[in-house]
Amino acid sequence: MEALAELRAVTEGVTYGELATLRRRLWADEEDAYRWFGQYLPAPEHRDAIEAGFEERVKAALCHDGDLRRWTDRLRAEIEPVLPLARLLARYPALDYPVIAPNVAAWRVLARFGGVFEVDHGWAAVPDLPSAVATTRDAVTALGEALRAEAPAEIFAARGFSLTDEELVRWLAHCGYRVTETELHQPRRALHRAVERISPGKRTTRGPTATDLAADLLTQAGKPLHLDELLRRMDRQYSRGPLYNRLNADSRFVRVAPSTFALESWHIEPYAEPGGSSTENAVRLIETEGRPLHLDEIRARLARPITREGLRNALNATNRLVRVAPSTYDVRRSG
Image (cartoon, rainbow, N blue to C red; front, top):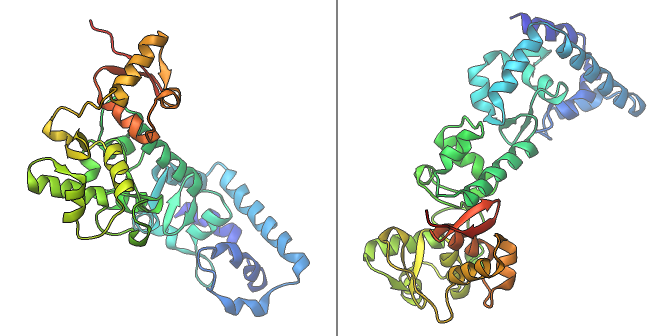
């Protein structure tokens, strides 16, 4: 392969002493690997110069208009924003080919000194892992701000993610979200955080969340249930107040009586509290001002407290309001 030949022209002259220094970055994901190199370490004043010189030579080769540059450009385009390293290596076996004796694979040189992509925790990302995580969180935010509930898989596909369902579930877990493969294809407005803020003694990153359990219980009952009845039927203990807030904030549920919840899919009329619901009060505020209002401005002026996510879900769920800008709402006009 010509691309590898261009890379080996740079790497094959690396000595054991130089490799002892380069190992710090080549095996950045394996801190305890290759300790035997320690006996070959050069003097400290030479180490930074060795790394800088090697990086300069690798990047110069990547800038040259040849097979190596075209190959790495193709790799970037296929990875962006993120792919499992195992899948990348399976698709491009040449990446695992040793380019420095005895067994330094090409991907380690390209990732650690070429800046072609970044590898960490089994993921390859372009330009790096923090950027891929930021893109993921932007997609989750867009899910919550969409004019209608959408399937997360569609949101991520639109942003360039080419992960399988299983891979996307693992990647979202890496980013701090918990979702099942089934939920990826169900319209929703939010993803669960990996650490639930319910009953600290029962926090877990495995198994269903408290809201998932509540949804299952309502499905089995086939009718609305009071919060206390939900708590009684759950197989684990949860704090009443936090669970109440989570059910109010989750678009799968609707409150149909004081502390009594139903599934939104049942299309039961929401409970109208004395003095009006948060949605009704938001409509009145917008009509009084005669202009669109931002979510935070509405929340600050409501008489009763409500979580930001809970208010967002309520405003997104009603057909009386329309989002005219990010987190900004106006009354929907007839005609």
